[in-house]
Amino acid sequence: MELRHLRYFKTVAEELHFGRASKKLNMAQPPLSKQIKQLEEELGVKLFDRTRPQIRLTRAGQEFLSRIHSIFDDVETAVRETQKIEQGKKGHLTIGFSVSASYELLPKIIREYQLKYPEVDLDLRELTTVEQVEALRKEEIQVGFLRTPIDQEMIETQVLHNEKFLIALPEDHPSSVEKVSVLGDLRNESFIMFPRKMGPSNYDEIIALCRNSGFSPNITLEVSQIQTIVNLVASGLGIAVLPESVKIAQRSGVVYRPLRETTGFDIAVAWRRNNNSLLVQNFLSITKMCCF
Image (tube, rainbow, N blue to C red; front, side, top):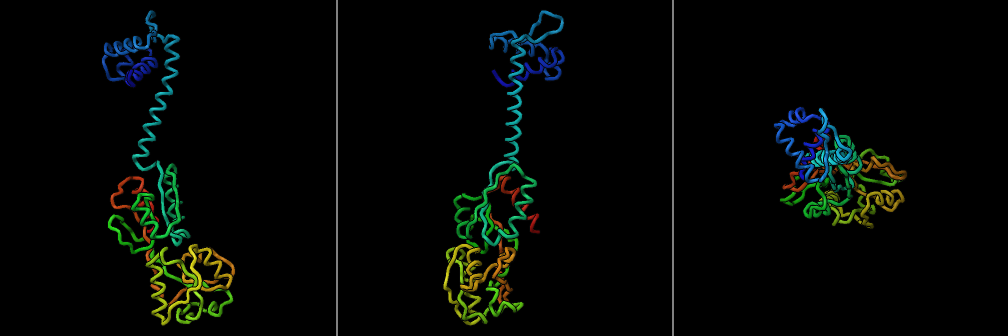
């Protein structure tokens, strides 16, 4: 028994007329009658009562019709859902992001993406740039929001935003009253920083900024979570050079001041060069729409 046999039966059962059914199916009437006869023989039941001028469904035929309606509903649903997956409108997308992308950039993109593609499940993972590069390489994530530059031929990037560094100070710090901080004036302070392994390029840039200002920073604490760094600054345990997006998350006891010396860093969206799935391409389209 094939799906086409069920379609033939369903059409005849709905029309209760072989002539009309054959026209609807774009086939001649004799082959249609033959196919229905073969279906009845295969099932071992009479589906139609042909003893009257107008054919009617037998009780067995009525039951069979009620059952196959659900089959066709399931087939239509399967076709529709399969097409959505192929078109990138349904599926599962795993996205990595660095903390600096999580304050403003990423929420805006996710909001727009979910409005257009509500049936795609998103898995968001906070990862360092180094971790995202490795996760992209292993295909553990499909898209990343990370800091450039990165040196991986297999990974494509598109710069979305340039973010500057600022200085986070305890609110009672003497320099908190200044509109712009000069890094050289803070040479004697205790610095709280991310471990270098979490973002070598940005760590090195902060060190270079300090050295260009005539000193090497006195790093007294290294902390992996940016919110913890902010909390430690608020407690008066040191100062920190952080991405400017952190100021969106207000924390009492801390003031943020722009740095005169900083040139900033680029945040980019990244994906594997050979990943051409529409699921990924649709997400990249929304990302570029939101940023340009």
